[in-house]
Image (cartoon, rainbow, N blue to C red; front, side, top):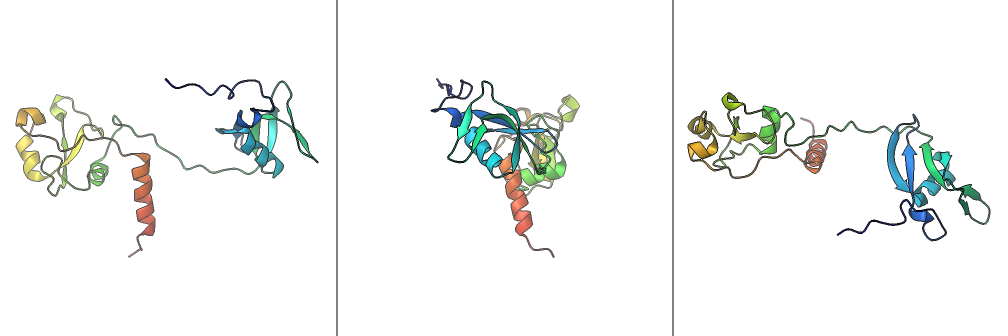
Amino acid sequence: MVTPMPFRHAAPNSDNWIRTDVLVLNASYEALTEIDAERAVVLLITGAAETVAAREPHFPIRSKHLEIALPETIRLLRYVYLEHRVLVHDESRATLAAVLRRDDNRCGYCAGWARTVDHIRPRSRGGPNTWANLIAACAPCNTRKADRTPEEAGMRLLWEPKAPTDMARAQRRVWKDLTPAP
C-alpha cells in the first residue's frame, strides 16, 4: 500500500512549506504543471515568474533581505513553447509505415524481412487499423495467414504488438537528428 505524502496539501508550516505544490502557468495563462514551492520561490526571486495567487492562509517566506508570500499559482514571464504531443495508445490508429518502423521491418510470425502489414483480426471480421491489431508480415506469412486469425492459421505471434512508447519516438528523433543529410 502506498502512503500518500501528507504535506502536499496540508497547511504549510516551517517544516513542510518547501514541499507544497504550486501551479505554474505559461505567460498566456495556460496551466503547464505543478512544481514544489522551493522551485517556485527560485523562479520568483530570479524574475522568471510572478505570483498570480498567494496561498491562503498567508505564509511568508523570509530571508535576511527579502520576504515573499508562499505562492499557490505563479505565471512565467516568458512564453514556453511546448512540443505538441499526441497521445498514442494500443487502440490508436496506425499507418503501414509506422507499423513497419515499430517492428523494424521484421515479420511478426517468422522474423523474416517484412514489407507488408497484417491485420491480426482480419478486416473482414471487423479488425481495426490500430497498433494492437497490426503487425509487420513478410509476403509468404501474410499470404499463408490470409483471412484467418493466427490461431486458425496455426501461426504464432513472436511478440505482442503495442503502440510505440514516448521513449521510442524520442530515440528515433535523436537518431534522425544525428544522421547526416545526404
